[in-house]
Image 1: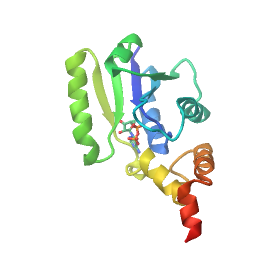
Image 2 (image 1 turned 120 degrees about the vertical axis):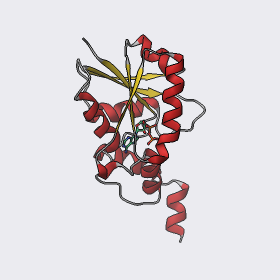
Image 3 (image 1 turned 120 degrees about the horizontal axis):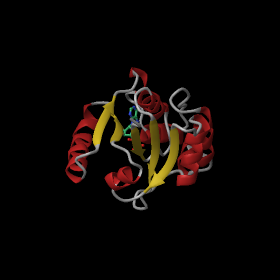
Image 4 (image 1 turned 45 degrees about the vertical axis):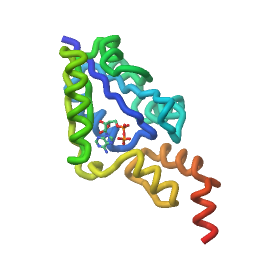
Length: 170
Ligand code: ADP
């Protein structure tokens, strides 16, 4: 049996928390499709191309790992990929409400697809893309929470931004 799973998310940018989940998923699926959700309504720091590059730099694509993008319904996309499993990460109780709703809604839409929740290593359980962006924008270090290349790219994005100007004017 070829177990194919989709791991969807914004990955704006990828963090070590995401990577932890990816490695855990690869322990029990045969193929993993890391799928970036393209959502034009949500303002992102990185373009989809940049987000794919950042993932590719730390998760080399091979016969087991594919890095892709999608828009629209996740279950439709998963069906197209022949995936029977959706991987999601659970950090804290705060994730639970939304994830629970989505899992049940997706099951209603496509009963054949199962959502599997994975818990990251403790040290990543408080890491989110949103938080690392905030810290970086304010000049804090996020070393150890994101890949090195991601930290450098974030620093470049925030260099000269209004937040930095605000900081240096104080
Ligand atoms: P975020 O919620 O940080 O903006 P995404 O939308 O890219 O990130 O999340 C994709 C999936 O990865 C979601 O299931 C989310 O709960 C999970 N995830 C994100 N960060 C972590 C982490 N630090 N540990 C475990 N799972 C995570």
